[in-house]
Length: 230
Ligand code: G3P
Image 1 (tube, rainbow, N blue to C red):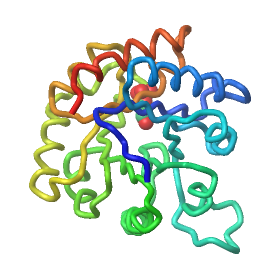
Image 2 (tube, rainbow, N blue to C red):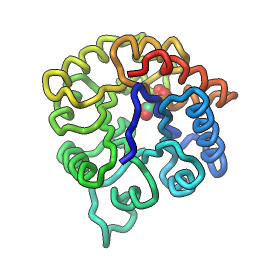
Image 3 (cartoon, helix red, strand yellow):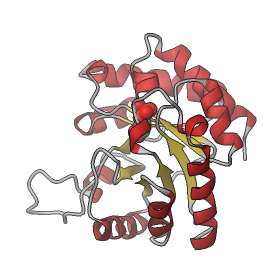
């Protein structure tokens, strides 16, 4: 299992038109080159149909944006953990706000990922959810207030208490779970504010994917990570 360094930047490509076809490869290669030049951890989460192509194209960690709890075998259409592992994915977002799954299935997937030696990053909407999901012992919990996703208003500035309360919640339940945050992060001050609050990384989607200059924007958002190496 590769070791992920913290703090980290996860770029969620979602299914934005900018990353159709070759767009995903192009963005992944730029992320890889910035990660290497700055010597920071950048994880990419491209659209599911591009995963195998991307894991073959770059050497930085690749996560799926979603995974199902269905078994291997006769499960047509399901995104099965063993399958994404077999094509080189290091882990997956689980229960993203835009792709929620039942709570029991979250626990099931986290357990299955442990056996598969894959990284689980469970998304939560509130500190109460953070406390519940921390009891499943995922590797990471990503706190993202849904109303700020895609808004350009950063969680780290508009709702700093959501981050600090999430960290407190995790400390009470399971200190080994790492808290990162996302929603509305668009510039380096937003990243800096998140790291100062104790977040061990950030998730960014529209701030990068919609930027007219991917390289400059990834550099800008990754630079604060170099000052918070743990
Ligand atoms: O997974 C991260 C994502 O939900 C944040 O979206 O566009 O606010 O950076 P965005």
